[in-house]
Image (cartoon, rainbow, N blue to C red; front, side, top):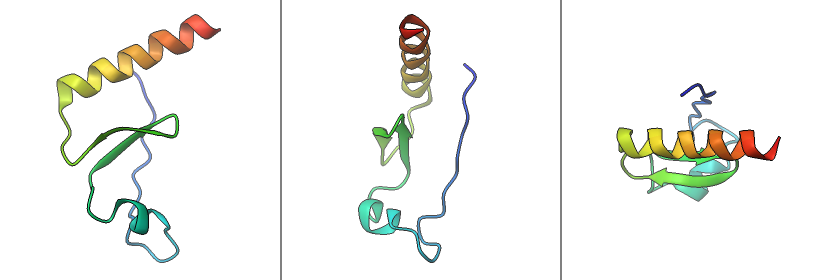
Length: 60
């Protein structure tokens, strides 16, 4: 499943994500919404990405 990943250091100066996710890392956001936090379940993440890809292709 192709996707673009932005890795963000929430503790870098000027990052507002530190306040938002301080106790919840790692966090996966997809299209601005939290898809997963605390643990990354790879099979579940792949399903989420596939469903998002299907949804995007149906909207076009």
